[in-house]
Amino acid sequence: MSSSAVEPEAPDLVCQLDNVQGLVDALTAVRWKRHQDAVVELSEHGIVLIVEESRCLQAKVYLQRELFIRYDYNAQGRPRFGVSLGLFVDCLNTFSAPGHSNTIEIQYPGPDMQLLLKSLDSLGGCIYAEIRTRIPETVSWDYNFEPAGSTPLSFTVKSAALKEAIDDLEWPGSSIQIILQPVPPSVTFRGEGHGDLQIDFMYYVNTDLLIAFHCEHQASYRYKYKFLRATTSNIPSSVIKDNRGSKLTIGRGGMLKVQHLVSVARSSISHSHIDSAQPSRIAYIEFFVKPEEDDPARND
Image (cartoon, rainbow, N blue to C red):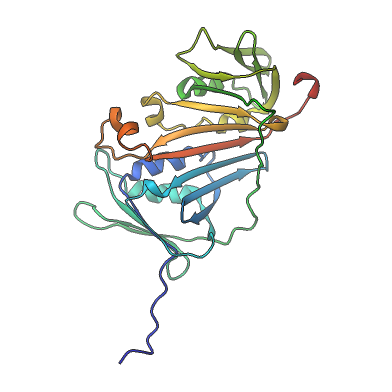
């Protein structure tokens, strides 16, 4: 009868998420300017969105498959496509209603290689969106983050305190020096403009702010302010409200890694049960910032 009919190929990915606002928060965290292109990589393990600037700053949003209530992956290999981050976030915002945990379906590719969005529980109607994608022009830079020695140089600080410290050090075109020293165990952020300003986090004094600290030798690196500020400028209010911490690690050559955790649990679940009831409903955000200079004499 219809033996000659060709079955349409299954999309590479069809997934459903029951907290659109959580996804908006995660993607907004890496949106540090109005016009940004992003590369999206799909795999059986989840979705990774990558944004870069000047080969000095890279950010990644990891959306593990456990975040989704449905995740049908049919592709061979790992498909990649480019998309406007601002357009993607703005489209997602149209699917999010305050006080309501909206469910959305995401499909790729559409008939013309679009990214397709569809609401599944909109009140009084259904919302559809198509976002044009492109072939990525370049391969995302592999920052090849390596530990600086056998013991990592790292510290965890409350996200709100980190954002406040970096905001307070603002000076156009300036650099921020981050200094870790084991005795006394502390982290210093020092900004230079017309005069110097520094903010100190003392480990044993401010354990409510500086939650964890690992450092066996003094280290000091400078980072361009605009790149450092991008790591905290759009931390979601949910992260501040949940009183979460952000982890900073300095790798070989002074490469800085900044990590945030964003909850993508349904908003109907009380905050007190988010981590215990749904430990996998977390989006992982990573920033990599190249140092402005590397002075070996200061990092022995």
